[in-house]
Length: 283
Ligand SMILES: Cc1cc2nc3c(=O)[nH]c(=O)nc-3n(C[C@H](O)[C@H](O)[C@H](O)COP(=O)(O)O)c2cc1C
Ligand code: SF4
Ligand code: SF4
Image 1 (cartoon, protein in one colour):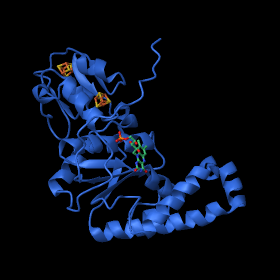
Image 2 (cartoon, protein in one colour; image 1 turned 90 degrees about the vertical axis):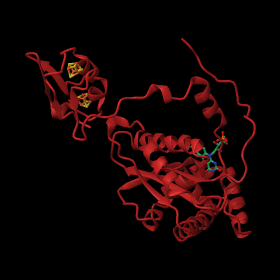
Image 3 (tube, helix red, strand yellow; image 1 turned 180 degrees about the vertical axis):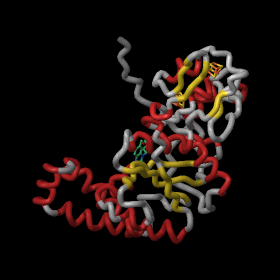
């Protein structure tokens, strides 16, 4: 939020807010703090850094950070290491208070130029989830038909998406559709909650913003006893069949940049996984 007022009486003229801003959104002129609205990107840093609480935004003075309840390094490391993709969920719906905690976590994700352009469409009722899942599989059947055409593969692969020429894509589509015919849901795993994160296509960094917001939700889910699985397949499908957005009332000018399923996991993982050693160059 943009700073709105300054209590000149308690302001110490320390200049911390001005230095933190660095954009000229706030300045010290003739010993007084002044605002320059057009230069401000409403990041809130000046209000957050003022040691005496002299600055407020339209919502007032934000609460002080309680560092005593932040996770320890070991706690954070364990959270990051133990998060897994869950593909088997209990049938019960995700409690509304947990949905609210997920959204609260997403709200504080970083975004390019602090645009916070991400919006969320949550499919929770069985009717909505089933209708959307059916619509997705119908598009997958259409995709399979198109992928069988060698000329379509050649031109679309050349002009739009080289992955359509990959035989692996056709095989995994065939496999998914066979599993669907057998009554399974290999796309959303019959999860009780599907989250689509979308934003206007025109913006600073809409894809990154949506992905970071979703990952905030994924991490928060772990602390609530929820499992999640990021769903790149659904994101690609919606990109190729943008009419799917209509099924869930997502505006046409938006693009769905990220998707994930959430639910209470059927089973808990008991061990960490091994991973490749990190490839990094320190120069
Ligand atoms: C961008 C992205 C897209 C993904 N898409 C899918 C997907 O469509 N279906 C799926 O089952 N898992 C998907 N995953 C989950 C990965 O398979 C999973 O993260 C990886 O196998 C490592 O397992 P872990 O998440 O349990 O550590 C995706 C993960 C990422 C980061
Ligand atoms: S909100 Fe951010 S951009 Fe605006 S004046 Fe404060 S520090 Fe500068
Ligand atoms: S950080 Fe606070 S005390 Fe320091 S100059 Fe800015 S408003 Fe005044």
